[in-house]
Amino acid sequence: MPDIIQLLPDNIANQIAAGEVIQRPASAVKELLENAVDAGATEVKLIVTDAGKNLIQVVDNGKGMSETDARMCFERHATSKISSIEDLFKIKTMGFRGEALASIAAVAQVELKTRKVDDELGSCLEVENSIVKKQEPCGASAGTNICMKNLFFNVPARRNFLKSNAAEMRHIVDEFIRVAMAFPHIFFSLTSNGQQVFHLESGSLKQRISQILGTSYTSKLVSVSEDTDYMNVYGFVGKPETAKKTRGDQYFFVNNRFIKSAYLNHAVMRAFDEMIAKDSFPMYVLFIDLDPSQLDINVHPTKQEIKFEDEKIVYAFVQAAVKHALAQFSIAPSLDFSLNADIQQMEAVSKPVSGDRMESITSSNLFKTFSQKNQAHKIEGTNRSELRSWKDFYEPSAQPLPSDAYTDTETENTSGQLEYTGYSLLKDEQKQRLLPDAILTQLHAAYIVTPTAQGFLLVHQQQAHERVLYERYSEAVHGKQMPTQQSLFPSTIQLGVSDAVLMQDLLPDLKVLGYLIEPFGNNTFVVQGTPADILQGNEKMAIELLLEQYKHFSSDIKFTKREKLVRCVAKQQAIKTGRSLGQKEMMVLVEELFSCKTPNITPNGSPTYLEFKADYLERMFGK
Ligand code: ADP
Ligand code: MG
Image 1 (tube, protein in one colour):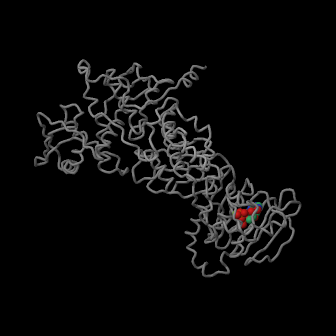
Image 2 (cartoon, rainbow, N blue to C red; image 1 turned 90 degrees about the horizontal axis):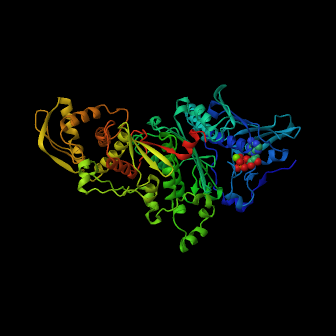
């Protein structure tokens, strides 16, 4: 009957961030639930009364404690989870400081019943004010049943500081959810004042998310899953349409530990760029697993903040993983373009290993575990000098976009001005995939079939062009005004009163987009010029339509005025389905699409192309 709990020697105890462990009922709940998880329980029941002020009880079916351990566990710095300084760098358990039960026993009346599966009898203890009042052998179920009664009974000042039951209960539910979310294969229940609040059968993470956050997400979850030797990211993000005005449903777990990180949150927000309104919050439940030596979880008393050895890699990886997942959800059947491109740009995988870099690699823990599997993300033949640096990775540099591509008509072919030598704007790697000398085919005046190295793309001409225009106009709003083409015969538009007010309001932004419109009094406007790359002739109708679209822009999405306008103009001016395109026009469109920052979806998130890969095709043909 081996005892496993040891007192930590002083030198280790001193290394450990002192934990102000028990501030409120919820802090005790967190510690007790984590102990049950660490004990390998498959069933954990939490029972509280009066928001934990009177009772917090956790019943688990984990490994239980021996008679000696049951006594030892209430000592300060008594733990079975670490025993040496090195252990601090390979922590796989939730707890490790050996302080929680000691702190709880100092501020409450505790009753512990515990039995190891193979023992016949269990142990019962009563502890109060850190003093063991009673310990005796007793019959008990296998596992541990711990009751914490009358929190702060001996520290009335702190008891008085507790908030209302409703507020304290909210904190308890938060902590309960954070633990339950991280361990979907464990059954959890929460009973409050005799009423069951949660009953979470064990299951998949997807099921657990639905159980906790509600079934409204069930069919709206996008799976995230990226593995490398350095780290794995997996979990789910909500489809863009599920984004909410409040940031409630956002969870990060690092090695199954819930953490708060504004930095990583930013990485996810960046992955959602342009897919959701600026002031709305996507749902996510993301797990980051990496070698414990790459983390310091010992920087914060409640361990909710951690330090990464290299947080930039984690940021970039999370962003790339979420982006990739979102791309896949809109681009069936498969697309692995974007992740590879993104991951490749991580210095750790992209830079050739040279003299001094080798030194920094070997001296940094980070790179020790970066092994061959990551290197496989490299695509042969990529011009490494073109790979963007870290900084660019966060602020993707603007891609050059020709502003006059669509003034190119078939007749200009003969002028020889626009000789296309393949996709000249694209990076080598994309060029290779898109096969520079392939013939493109238009189908039903709607789709462009684009051969790739591994299969083919089916590009939706209208949606692809909408993306291209959207990025071009967005750039214009952020600085580079679009060139205007003066109208030879300015046309006048007569508007109703409210439309005229709206028009007046939009004039400055329209100007940035290349529309030169002047008020002429009496709700009348004169169109002096239009963006250089749109066909002339029907300005009047185009502008009326634009106003109409602008007005009907979904009002529950709070985009800025400019963003709305950009979206409307892009939608309106996109080449429509039904227009037949010449070889060169198709080439330009495809090329421009893949020069976009986010080529795979329209601003609203519809796919711009589908990729059919050779292996998928073969499977479809039963090979
Ligand atoms: P820590 O979790 O940091 O080790 P605690 O004070 O929370 O410190 O717990 C002290 C020790 O008591 C743990 O290391 C563990 O061995 C034992 N223990 C606590 N709770 C349980 C439980 N529910 N089941 C089995 N053992 C437990
Ligand atoms: Mg603990």
